[in-house]
Image (cartoon, rainbow, N blue to C red):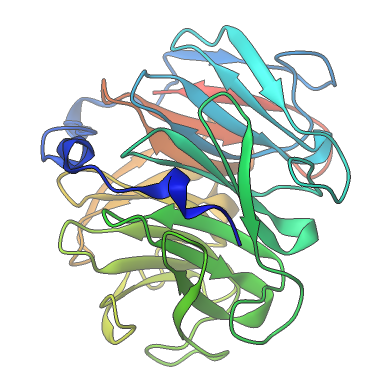
Amino acid sequence: MFDSSHFFFFLFFSSRFVTGLYRRDYSKVSNQPASQFGSKGTGDGQFNFPYSVACNSRGETIVADKDNNRIQVFDRNGKFLFKFGSEGPGNGQFSYPRGVTVDQRNNQIVVADTGKHRIQIFDEMGICLGVFGSKGNRDGQFSFPYGVVVDRQGNYVVADRSNNRIQIFNSQGQFVRKFGSEGKGNGQVNSPVGVGLLSNANIVVSEFDNHRLQIFEPQGNFVRMVSAGQVKGPCHLFVDSDDSILVVDDGNGRIQVFNQNGHHIKSIGTGQLVNPRGVCMDREGRIIVSEAPVLGGVHRISIF
């Protein structure tokens, strides 16, 4: 649990969700990256399995540098700004973080600390504000959380991967509800990794082992299937302000874009990306992708 004083909701911040931010004409997106940065290593600006990416209101890119057990922050040109975190069990430390997002109301950084089965909240400079969750399968516990996103009210939506469910917490980290169970049917989930929010508050979930995306109402009721049979091992995802869904199609080495009804809009990075893991869009509409091959190769960020 964490201090609720850090999470007062100001109506001013609701403007960050106004339609018009995070938008792109996908017909004009090249299959070739416009720029790239990063290499394998432990130094500042280097990566060891960058797994997830997020963007804040200043256009900075935040990277969950999984095997280096840290978060790194870069400016819009890929210049290293700062880092935080180290390996360990304490608050502000990590064990293979695989998910990161930004609370668009206040630029707070939210990290799925996957190996420690918890969610950690940081201010925009990397100071830990609080932690919730522990290992287990009871309400409020996790088994390898991956994706996380924050809604307009400050609620946290978490892909609880090995428990095959989605959990929702209020702005103080208190358990609210859960939905999903292991399986292949509508409304069931198998290894959920990515989560995103549509403008109507419906929740988009990517399932790594079921090779599909599903949409759910905020209460957890199944709405529709998206992209069944069109993606292989989908990882993290991002929803733009037009409700287009960008999902990492890891098994096919590309980013796929769908509308919320499942219509395919665009494939990006085919033949250019190597084991993409995370995707986000900055306020200029640039698509930012993390790449982290299992066996050697590139550890970098590509921008489209």
